[in-house]
Length: 120
Length: 147
Image (tube, rainbow over all chains, first blue to last red; front, side, top):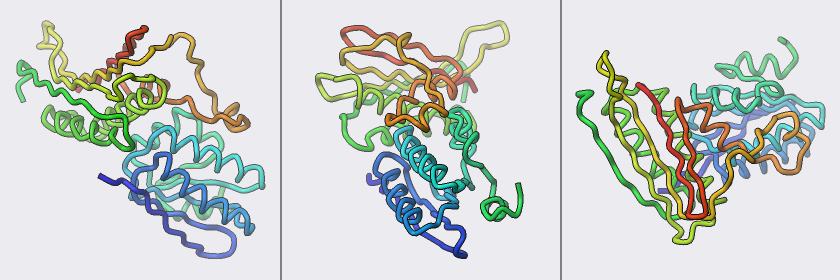
Protein backbone atom coordinates (compact mmCIF):
# COMPACT_ATOMS: atom_id res chain seq x y z
CA UNK A 1 0.00 0.00 0.00
CA UNK A 2 2.68 2.50 -0.93
CA UNK A 3 1.57 6.09 -1.14
CA UNK A 4 5.02 7.33 -2.16
CA UNK A 5 4.87 10.89 -3.33
CA UNK A 6 6.10 11.78 -6.79
CA UNK A 7 7.28 15.32 -7.42
CA UNK A 8 7.87 16.69 -10.89
CA UNK A 9 9.56 19.99 -11.64
CA UNK A 10 8.70 22.48 -14.35
CA UNK A 11 10.50 25.75 -14.89
CA UNK A 12 8.44 27.84 -17.28
CA UNK A 13 11.05 30.59 -17.09
CA UNK A 14 14.03 31.59 -14.97
CA UNK A 15 11.94 33.41 -12.39
CA UNK A 16 9.57 30.75 -11.12
CA UNK A 17 9.40 27.00 -10.68
CA UNK A 18 6.44 24.67 -10.40
CA UNK A 19 6.60 21.54 -8.25
CA UNK A 20 3.73 19.18 -9.04
CA UNK A 21 2.96 16.54 -6.43
CA UNK A 22 1.25 13.20 -6.95
CA UNK A 23 0.39 11.27 -3.80
CA UNK A 24 0.34 11.51 -0.03
CA UNK A 25 2.24 14.39 1.57
CA UNK A 26 3.46 12.80 4.79
CA UNK A 27 6.95 12.89 6.30
CA UNK A 28 8.69 11.27 3.34
CA UNK A 29 6.57 13.17 0.83
CA UNK A 30 7.28 16.45 2.57
CA UNK A 31 11.00 15.68 2.63
CA UNK A 32 11.00 15.05 -1.12
CA UNK A 33 9.27 18.37 -1.75
CA UNK A 34 11.78 20.08 0.55
CA UNK A 35 14.73 18.42 -1.19
CA UNK A 36 13.64 19.75 -4.57
CA UNK A 37 12.63 23.15 -3.20
CA UNK A 38 15.98 23.64 -1.46
CA UNK A 39 17.81 22.74 -4.67
CA UNK A 40 15.82 25.45 -6.45
CA UNK A 41 16.54 27.98 -3.69
CA UNK A 42 20.20 27.05 -3.88
CA UNK A 43 20.33 27.97 -7.54
CA UNK A 44 18.47 31.25 -6.94
CA UNK A 45 14.90 30.32 -7.88
CA UNK A 46 12.97 31.71 -4.91
CA UNK A 47 9.44 31.96 -6.33
CA UNK A 48 7.82 28.57 -6.12
CA UNK A 49 4.41 27.17 -6.97
CA UNK A 50 3.30 23.91 -5.39
CA UNK A 51 0.60 22.35 -7.57
CA UNK A 52 -1.22 19.70 -5.52
CA UNK A 53 -3.70 18.64 -8.19
CA UNK A 54 -2.84 14.95 -7.75
CA UNK A 55 -2.54 15.05 -3.97
CA UNK A 56 -5.75 14.14 -2.20
CA UNK A 57 -4.45 13.74 1.34
CA UNK A 58 -1.80 15.31 3.53
CA UNK A 59 -0.87 15.03 7.17
CA UNK A 60 0.41 17.57 9.65
CA UNK A 61 3.96 16.18 9.55
CA UNK A 62 4.10 16.82 5.82
CA UNK A 63 2.61 20.28 6.24
CA UNK A 64 5.15 21.07 8.95
CA UNK A 65 7.87 20.36 6.41
CA UNK A 66 6.09 22.70 3.99
CA UNK A 67 6.27 25.35 6.75
CA UNK A 68 10.05 24.82 6.83
CA UNK A 69 10.14 25.34 3.06
CA UNK A 70 8.03 28.48 3.44
CA UNK A 71 10.39 29.81 6.11
CA UNK A 72 13.41 29.37 3.83
CA UNK A 73 11.59 30.90 0.84
CA UNK A 74 10.66 33.97 2.90
CA UNK A 75 14.19 34.21 4.32
CA UNK A 76 15.47 34.53 0.75
CA UNK A 77 12.91 37.18 -0.16
CA UNK A 78 10.89 34.75 -2.25
CA UNK A 79 7.26 33.81 -2.60
CA UNK A 80 5.41 30.52 -2.20
CA UNK A 81 2.04 29.74 -3.74
CA UNK A 82 -0.23 26.71 -3.82
CA UNK A 83 -2.85 25.71 -6.35
CA UNK A 84 -5.33 22.92 -7.04
CA UNK A 85 -5.91 22.20 -3.35
CA UNK A 86 -8.82 19.96 -2.39
CA UNK A 87 -11.36 21.79 -0.21
CA UNK A 88 -10.16 19.85 2.85
CA UNK A 89 -6.47 20.58 2.24
CA UNK A 90 -7.27 24.27 1.66
CA UNK A 91 -9.35 24.34 4.85
CA UNK A 92 -6.47 22.71 6.74
CA UNK A 93 -4.00 25.29 5.40
CA UNK A 94 -6.40 28.04 6.51
CA UNK A 95 -6.75 26.46 9.97
CA UNK A 96 -2.98 26.41 10.33
CA UNK A 97 -2.60 29.98 9.10
CA UNK A 98 -0.41 29.09 6.14
CA UNK A 99 -2.48 31.39 3.95
CA UNK A 100 -1.15 34.36 5.94
CA UNK A 101 2.34 33.78 4.53
CA UNK A 102 1.74 31.89 1.30
CA UNK A 103 -0.99 32.42 -1.28
CA UNK A 104 -3.56 29.88 -2.37
CA UNK A 105 -4.98 29.94 -5.91
CA UNK A 106 -7.47 27.71 -7.69
CA UNK A 107 -5.29 27.23 -10.78
CA UNK A 108 -1.65 27.80 -11.81
CA UNK A 109 -2.20 30.84 -14.04
CA UNK A 110 -3.10 33.44 -11.38
CA UNK A 111 -0.53 31.88 -9.05
CA UNK A 112 2.23 32.37 -11.62
CA UNK A 113 1.11 35.97 -12.23
CA UNK A 114 1.36 36.66 -8.49
CA UNK A 115 4.73 34.92 -8.20
CA UNK A 116 6.09 37.03 -11.07
CA UNK A 117 4.76 40.20 -9.45
CA UNK A 118 2.34 40.86 -12.30
CA UNK A 119 -0.67 40.79 -9.95
CA UNK A 120 -1.13 41.30 -6.23
CA UNK B 1 -29.63 4.27 4.09
CA UNK B 2 -32.15 4.19 6.90
CA UNK B 3 -31.42 6.58 9.76
CA UNK B 4 -32.58 3.83 12.13
CA UNK B 5 -29.99 1.40 10.89
CA UNK B 6 -26.71 1.75 12.76
CA UNK B 7 -23.55 0.30 11.28
CA UNK B 8 -20.22 -0.30 13.00
CA UNK B 9 -16.73 -1.42 11.95
CA UNK B 10 -13.80 -2.32 14.19
CA UNK B 11 -10.24 -2.15 12.93
CA UNK B 12 -6.87 -2.72 14.56
CA UNK B 13 -3.82 -1.31 12.81
CA UNK B 14 -0.15 -1.76 13.67
CA UNK B 15 2.04 1.22 14.44
CA UNK B 16 3.69 1.29 11.05
CA UNK B 17 4.17 3.78 8.22
CA UNK B 18 1.04 4.64 6.25
CA UNK B 19 -1.28 2.37 8.26
CA UNK B 20 -3.34 5.51 8.86
CA UNK B 21 -4.30 5.36 5.20
CA UNK B 22 -5.80 1.91 5.76
CA UNK B 23 -8.03 3.46 8.39
CA UNK B 24 -9.28 6.14 6.00
CA UNK B 25 -10.69 3.46 3.70
CA UNK B 26 -13.31 2.64 6.35
CA UNK B 27 -14.26 6.31 6.56
CA UNK B 28 -14.80 6.41 2.81
CA UNK B 29 -16.90 3.24 2.83
CA UNK B 30 -19.18 4.28 5.68
CA UNK B 31 -19.30 7.91 4.60
CA UNK B 32 -20.48 6.98 1.11
CA UNK B 33 -23.02 4.54 2.51
CA UNK B 34 -24.53 7.21 4.79
CA UNK B 35 -24.32 9.85 2.01
CA UNK B 36 -22.12 12.11 4.09
CA UNK B 37 -20.80 14.06 1.09
CA UNK B 38 -17.35 14.15 -0.44
CA UNK B 39 -15.95 17.15 1.44
CA UNK B 40 -17.13 15.90 4.83
CA UNK B 41 -15.72 12.43 4.13
CA UNK B 42 -12.36 14.00 3.30
CA UNK B 43 -12.46 16.01 6.52
CA UNK B 44 -13.09 12.89 8.59
CA UNK B 45 -10.30 11.07 6.74
CA UNK B 46 -7.89 13.90 7.56
CA UNK B 47 -8.92 13.87 11.22
CA UNK B 48 -8.48 10.09 11.40
CA UNK B 49 -5.02 10.39 9.87
CA UNK B 50 -4.07 12.96 12.51
CA UNK B 51 -5.46 10.91 15.38
CA UNK B 52 -3.59 7.82 14.16
CA UNK B 53 -0.24 9.52 13.71
CA UNK B 54 -0.62 11.17 17.12
CA UNK B 55 -1.09 7.71 18.61
CA UNK B 56 1.79 6.29 16.55
CA UNK B 57 4.23 8.99 17.58
CA UNK B 58 3.27 10.14 21.06
CA UNK B 59 1.30 7.46 22.89
CA UNK B 60 4.10 5.02 23.66
CA UNK B 61 1.58 2.26 23.07
CA UNK B 62 2.81 -0.99 24.59
CA UNK B 63 1.38 -3.40 22.03
CA UNK B 64 2.29 -1.24 19.03
CA UNK B 65 -1.31 -1.24 17.90
CA UNK B 66 -4.06 1.34 17.53
CA UNK B 67 -7.71 0.35 17.65
CA UNK B 68 -10.40 2.16 15.73
CA UNK B 69 -14.16 1.97 15.85
CA UNK B 70 -16.24 3.52 13.09
CA UNK B 71 -19.93 3.95 13.78
CA UNK B 72 -22.85 5.38 11.83
CA UNK B 73 -25.88 6.16 13.97
CA UNK B 74 -28.56 8.75 14.56
CA UNK B 75 -29.26 10.89 17.58
CA UNK B 76 -32.72 10.44 18.96
CA UNK B 77 -34.88 13.49 18.52
CA UNK B 78 -38.33 14.74 17.70
CA UNK B 79 -37.30 15.42 14.11
CA UNK B 80 -35.91 11.93 13.65
CA UNK B 81 -32.45 12.90 14.88
CA UNK B 82 -29.27 13.79 13.10
CA UNK B 83 -27.24 11.04 11.50
CA UNK B 84 -23.52 11.04 12.19
CA UNK B 85 -20.29 9.17 11.56
CA UNK B 86 -18.27 8.71 14.74
CA UNK B 87 -14.72 7.42 14.90
CA UNK B 88 -12.99 6.31 18.11
CA UNK B 89 -9.20 6.04 18.05
CA UNK B 90 -7.75 4.16 21.02
CA UNK B 91 -4.24 3.39 22.16
CA UNK B 92 -2.96 1.79 25.36
CA UNK B 93 -0.08 4.21 25.81
CA UNK B 94 0.85 6.48 28.69
CA UNK B 95 -1.81 9.11 28.05
CA UNK B 96 -1.54 12.88 28.13
CA UNK B 97 -3.30 15.94 29.48
CA UNK B 98 -5.09 17.64 26.57
CA UNK B 99 -5.44 20.86 28.58
CA UNK B 100 -1.64 21.19 28.59
CA UNK B 101 -1.34 21.05 24.81
CA UNK B 102 -0.68 24.60 23.65
CA UNK B 103 -2.36 25.84 20.49
CA UNK B 104 0.24 26.29 17.75
CA UNK B 105 0.59 29.64 16.00
CA UNK B 106 1.95 29.88 12.48
CA UNK B 107 3.96 33.04 13.17
CA UNK B 108 5.80 31.34 16.02
CA UNK B 109 6.21 28.07 14.14
CA UNK B 110 7.83 29.83 11.19
CA UNK B 111 10.70 30.94 13.42
CA UNK B 112 10.83 27.92 15.71
CA UNK B 113 13.00 24.85 15.16
CA UNK B 114 10.03 22.63 16.07
CA UNK B 115 7.27 23.19 13.55
CA UNK B 116 4.95 20.36 14.51
CA UNK B 117 2.15 20.00 17.06
CA UNK B 118 -0.84 20.73 14.81
CA UNK B 119 -2.72 17.44 15.10
CA UNK B 120 -5.28 18.24 17.79
CA UNK B 121 -6.02 21.65 16.34
CA UNK B 122 -6.70 20.12 12.93
CA UNK B 123 -8.91 17.40 14.42
CA UNK B 124 -10.96 19.88 16.45
CA UNK B 125 -11.37 22.21 13.49
CA UNK B 126 -12.44 19.57 10.99
CA UNK B 127 -14.84 17.58 13.17
CA UNK B 128 -18.18 18.67 14.64
CA UNK B 129 -17.56 17.19 18.07
CA UNK B 130 -14.36 15.87 19.68
CA UNK B 131 -13.88 14.24 23.07
CA UNK B 132 -10.55 13.10 24.47
CA UNK B 133 -10.36 10.67 27.35
CA UNK B 134 -6.79 10.07 28.46
CA UNK B 135 -5.13 8.47 31.44
CA UNK B 136 -2.32 6.18 32.41
CA UNK B 137 -3.98 3.29 30.57
CA UNK B 138 -4.15 5.07 27.27
CA UNK B 139 -6.04 7.59 25.21
CA UNK B 140 -9.32 7.53 23.35
CA UNK B 141 -10.22 10.27 20.89
CA UNK B 142 -13.90 10.28 19.91
CA UNK B 143 -14.64 12.33 16.80
CA UNK B 144 -18.08 12.93 15.35
CA UNK B 145 -19.20 14.38 12.02
CA UNK B 146 -22.87 15.05 11.29
CA UNK B 147 -24.41 14.48 7.87
